[in-house]
Amino acid sequence: MPQRFFSTRSPDRFVDVKEAVLRSLPADNGLYMPESMDELGEDFWENWRGMSLPEIGVHVARAVFKDSIPEEELEKIVHESANFPAPLVSVKEKEHVLELFHGPTLAFKDFGARFMARLMAWLTRDDEGMLTVLVATSGDTGGAVASAFHGVPGTRVVILYPKGKVSGLQEKQLTTLGENITALEVDGTFDDCQRLVKSAFLKREMSEKLNLTSANSINISRLVPQSFYYFEAAKNLPEGVRPTFVIPSGNFGNLTAGLLAEKLGLQIERFVAATNRNDVVPEYLREGEYKPRPSVATISNAMDVGAPSNFARMENIFGNQWEAMKSRVAGFAYGDEVTRETIRRIYQETEYVLEPHGAVGWLAAEAWREDHPDAHTVVLETAHPSKFLDVMEEELGEGEIEVPERLACLAEREKVAIPMGIDEQLFHEWLENMA
Image (cartoon, rainbow, N blue to C red):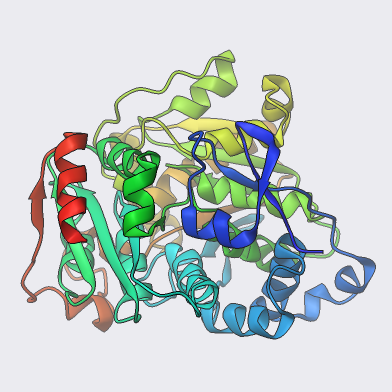
């Protein structure tokens, strides 16, 4: 049977895959979740360690979407999306890093963005009119979405990013492609960008007129391919080892994807959420009260989120029970100074290069191992160090970080971005004028 999806705020109302993916945000401002997810069967677990990443991805995607997408189409979407590696690197004994930055834009967002672009193309194959993709970014999402949708017929992409709060090369990834990609430089924070995007979806008449969809992790199709690499990491550990995944977290889509992998039967010891000063979720895990607040700027900018969208999905998975979430997810938070020190220290000790987000994850892994010395920790390294060149050169010296050509070539391109304030009405008027 085809999969059905419900809103976290209306668990008794269901939509099909096309509505969930293309409308992205339910009218009640909840988030879509799959109605049911059965654990993967014995035929999968008997063979999974010998499977490639795309082969694993096909099984995972089929378990989530069920019969909503023909098997041949689903295989094509997965194989075209996850056609780059996600290597597990053992930096120290039992201390591993999962490198998720080997895709076209050098960030883990490539998995979700490429999958989403191809799935949306299939879902709209017989539709008339233009699909408008809205996305807020704190750094890497915008670049991945821009790359995935660039030149795709029948689509236009609008990327909102906070002025002065993404790195120089990240900004060039958002603002230099042109054609069907438009960048809005918002005079505010990522939370402002995210609020503007959500507000557009809640204006249902305008949303339908513009055929709006979101490429943020509020879209359930972004999370499914992010589940693939949890299996990929686990299969490369010794048999019988249950990994503790340490996830640098901002909007908490990556961690939620790990929880989906666990629901499909992957044996995971624990999840550790690692944040910077924007520690809303670690604070919740300590105190039991969720208190979103304005984000503050840090050197790990992709995690500068003060009201993480996917917290609603995490609550749903754990039945809105604080104790249940706390029993599976631990949380740690760190400031810039110790993050910088860790970049230097780990490079001196191992010659491994951690960028700011991975360094926050490494700190959380070390903290976890103090009380769990036998844990096999896997830190998700979410972006290539060259995307944060200023910080990396300040800590490791000029010339120590190699910039891949697909990023270096952007440096001389001209930035093209439209200034935008944080007023919702003005943003809506700008969108209306696109039609």
